[in-house]
Length: 225
Length: 225
Image (cartoon, each protein chain N blue to C red):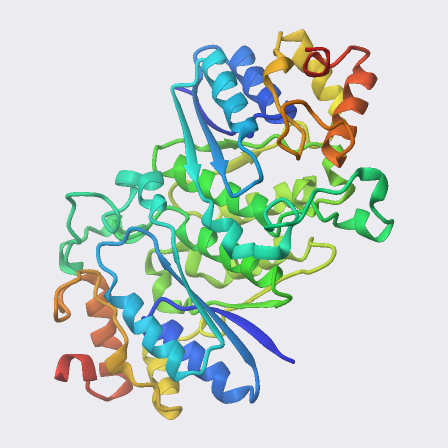
C-alpha cells in the first residue's frame, strides 16, 4: 500500500499537492499534518481541515506547537507579539533576501516533525509544497534545501524518509494551473498573513497569490466571495 | 561577544560539553535548551537545571514538547504508553542497528528547535553532545549526520547556524575523562532510561554509563550515593 504524509498548511501549494497526489495515485493512503505554531490566526487551519476531508485523508492531525512562538520570540513578525505584517511594497531590498515574515528555521522543524510522524507509522514519504516563488527570501523553500535534507535522512539505517517537493521548480501560477485541472476548490484555501475576515490583498502573501491567479488566467474565488 | 546554545539533556555528554565550553571560552554567553518530550521521567531535566546553574548559563529554557510523544506514539519505548525499556542484554543483533530506545527523528527535531532558538537570538552555534558510542544504533548521533545537517544550515543566506559536536569521535569514557579534568560533578547527571530513585544499572544507557566510568578508571558518584 502506498502511503504519504503531506504537510498541509491550508494554503494554495500544500492543498494542490494533497489533491494532486490523491488524484494521481489511486488508493494511496494519505496522512496530513498541520501546525498551530503561534501564527497570528488559525484561519488557514480550518481550510486545511476542509481540504483534508475533501481529499479523503485517513488521518489529519493538527499539532499545537505554539511553544514555538516563545522559542523564536521576536524572531518573526508572524509570531512576535505586538508586531504587524508589513505590506510587500514597504519591504526594502535588503529585507527581500530574508523578509520579516520569515520564521527562523520553521520549515526544517516542520519537516523533522513530519518525518518523525511518518517514520513511526511506516510511511516513507513526506510531501512538502514548497515552490520556486517562495525562494525570493526563504532559503528553506529551495531545491537545494530539499536535496540536502534528503541526504541527511538517507543516513537512517532502517527507515530513511524521502522529502518530495514536486513544486520546487514551479511558479505559484503553475501550481494554480495544476490545481484547476484536478478541480481544487481554492475558495477553501487561505494565504493572507493577516487574519481578517477577508484577505488584505497587500501583505507579501496576498500579492503573491494575486500574481498567481493572474498568471493562471483566472479570478481568485476567495476574492470574488 | 561569543555566544553558544547547548542542547542540555542532563546526561553525561551534554553536561560535560556545557562545562567544557564554559571552561575553555572565558566570557562566553551560554544558552541552554532542555526538552520534556514525553519521556517516562523528568529526573534528567532536574539535573540539567542544576548543571546550567553551575555553569553560569544566562538563559536555560525547558521546552515542553510532550506533544511529540503523541506524534511518534508507539514508535519508541521511551515514549509509548505501557511499554517498558528493555535490558541491553535482551536486545537482539537485529535491534542493535536501531534499538527500541531510538526515538524517530528526535535529534533532528531537537537540533532544528535549537537552531530556531539560536537564530532568533543572534547566536550562530548550537552545541550537541553526541558521541561515538551512541552510534551503535543511532544514525542521528554520527559525524556524517552532523556534517550533513551543517550543509543544510549553510544555505541560510543571513544567519547560518553551525552545529558543533566535539565529542562525535570520542568514546563515553573519553568524555568522562575530559569532564573530570574540568571538575564536572557527575553526581548531578542522569542517564538511566528508567525513572526510579536509583539507576537500574541494566538498561542500555546504564550499561554504557558503567562502561564509561570503568573506562575512565573511576567510580560513578551516582552509584556510590
